[in-house]
Amino acid sequence: MKSERSTDNRDIKSRSQSLDRGLQVLEMLAASDTELGVRDLARELGIAKSIVQRLLNTLVDRAFIEQEPQSRKYRIGSKSFEIGAGFTRSGSLAEICLPELEKMAKAHQLNCYLGILRDSEALYLATIQGSGPIAIQVSPGDRIALHTTALGKALLLDMSDAEIRNLLTASRLTRRTASTKVSVPALIAEIRKAEKHGYTLSLGENIIGIYSFGAPIRDKTGRIVAAISGALPQAMMQRKALPQLGEAVAAIAERISQRLGASSRNLAASSRAPAAAKFVPAAGRA
Image (tube, rainbow, N blue to C red; front, top):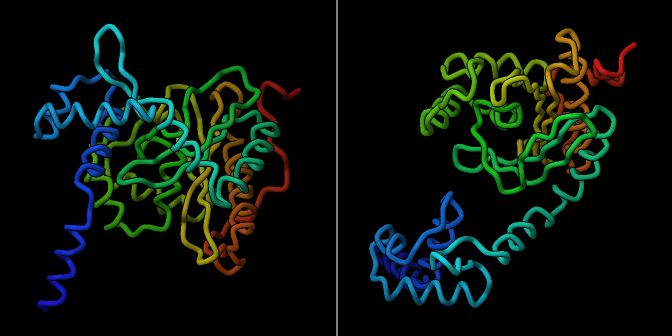
């Protein structure tokens, strides 16, 4: 027991307090909708303004943050964006998903997204603008609630009722539109139904008049590691076409999963059959 405690103590002592504080500054600036000053940051961190100023000077020198000349306050900088962009480029997930999302956007006139679960939210890794008439503004690095989006719901598909309940009650279920579900039992029931089809829906629950379709991405162990989704205006489709487009998105997610090493046995948990027909938006129908 003594040796275990001493190892833990060494681990704590081996951490860099300055680096930890600098990362806290970056996190605070990234999360803030407005620029922050030295006094703001010092108060939140509970440390002296002189220490915060040294951290800020270093971060400015390395372009991780920028100082606004007029207010003398700070905002996130270009280097932080480059680091974040490097994360989305790295690894086989983005390399495999991006070409598939581009094909999906072109074939179905969808705005397409790739995201992962982070804490109790979905974090967007990639976005592809479709050829449809409406641009839905979402950028890599943005976070969105799980309960309002098809992508967020797809990330929940393999979770137990208790896991979903713990995750969703840990965050505040805000009502984005009149269609947003804010009842955890209702959301769990929807997730269980979606498991049978292999795709999730958000019917104007995040943005009024926008329908989205999501499906999970699995790795070689069958574990959900990400999700994709496609969105388009409600006016571009007929409600009876929902299953056709949902199955098309699920088929693309399955193809990505197979390229990540997921076996047919792992994917067999979904009882749906991939759609063979191409979905044609209402605007393109005769």
